[in-house]
Length: 434
Image 1: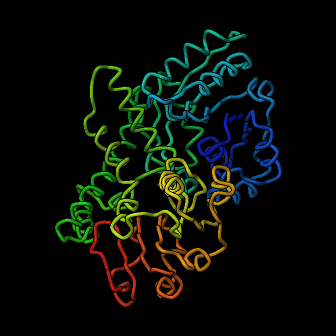
Image 2 (image 1 turned 30 degrees about the vertical axis):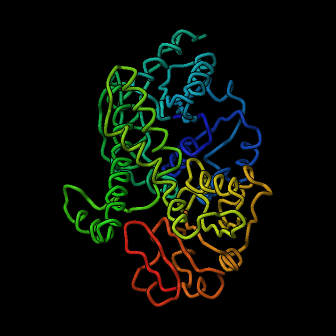
Image 3 (image 1 turned 60 degrees about the vertical axis):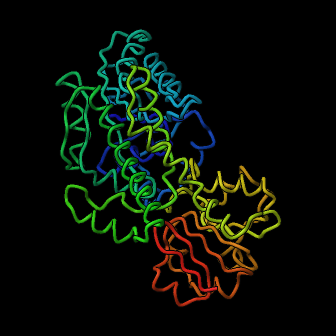
């Protein structure tokens, strides 16, 4: 089969590269010539562990082009993996999905299966089908399949190659059989359903995980008030198989391209149908407040942050990615700059993207030591390994005032107690040895 993937972002590129790993010949299509040229040179436009290695390993199995006409015309299967960014009202922006669908319809010359891999609101696959049928130039048969992804940034390759399930929303047995030929090399269980259910599975899954994160963060906030330890609480909860131990790590909220966008999109969709998902609405509100948790803590130590030297460790929304979408660092740094703080930051992966927003307003450092030297207070926004392995003694030695606000609980309290610092984390006792 000839497989074409439209879009070379997280969804499209990871899908394409992983399909090449199980023996398929892939053509990637994108309108961005710079991205295509990078890919042709063996360079991934996104940072994702393991992705570039598989790209190079299977370079003879993958081609990259901006020529949609020739790519689509004789394809057996076409994946739509373009972005669905959030609109101002919280709904999903589907213009890229519909633009690709129209382009596919105008160029295909044989029967094919068109797979919507992008995260789209319930009912979108049917709209895509109508658009394609309306714009067909040739008398061909098309089957539209909903096949949502469940990859997580930082572990996307493993999540794809070793997924717990493959969701196929199909309206025909023919489409189901074609998709099984595509995916049988993964040796993963299938859930076969209709397209609307497949679309809902994606949103319901992501929003449930967002609910777990928001719930444990609220419990962590209460733990600080009553003297409980959130890590012990989460451990005790997670040992219950009905609850599970995943997504029970307290912190300063979720970010990235999925949870914020998908919770808002499902909340918007429910309102559109005159129904309110109260739990999802609450998760959105809790997460919004949680992202400013460290800034609120900082007020305990300084009434005014103007002129203060602020050290920032970690800029991305999570480790092992360069993605800054909905990263707590973005909102916090914006406020700190407005208040007149002097900021030094270190994130070896996120710095390049962060400079697009703040090219000169903050000082970018080469290591942790340089970042925290002479700082009045330190904010930890991302739990990178280099931070978790950092020598705590250096906070005491290098900072002007060793006050460390840890939004990701990177250090064990028993270890921190050995140093003359203030260590204020999430859902745990504050260590104040000054």
